[in-house]
Image (cartoon, rainbow, N blue to C red; front, side, top):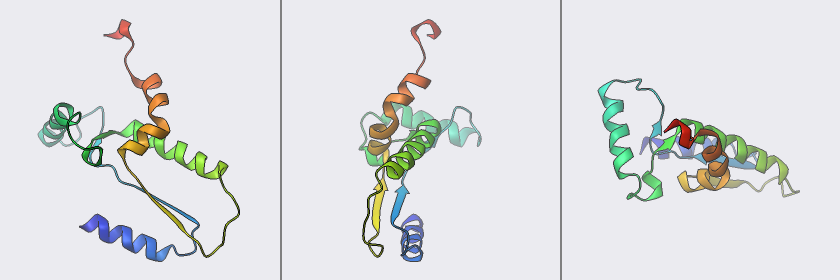
Amino acid sequence: RMKGLEEKAAIMNAKNVPHIRLFQPSTIVTEEYRYGWVDRTIFAFHAVFDPYVPTQYHSVDVRLLGMAMVADAEKMLHSLVEQDASESILAKVTYADYINVAGEAFEEQYQPKRSEL
């Protein structure tokens, strides 16, 4: 609920911004446990259940999220077309979008090689 209020406030205050991209990760997973047993529990839960839950609730690796944000920004910069200045384009970006934008590059860069297994 709080995130929804934050999104509405951001959208209302950015009326003159031509493109608004709202990234909505469910749980951001890192390589290290920063909050002790809470992180361990949440990360373990997502490791087991991510293949079965809808992408809206899928966890996202922090590196994938960062790569997707950069790739999305580059895509938006390359696809700028003339548009009505009063028109604002709003997009909510979720896990499925992260994979579409940066998934292949992420897999190549961060997945362990057979020799590392």
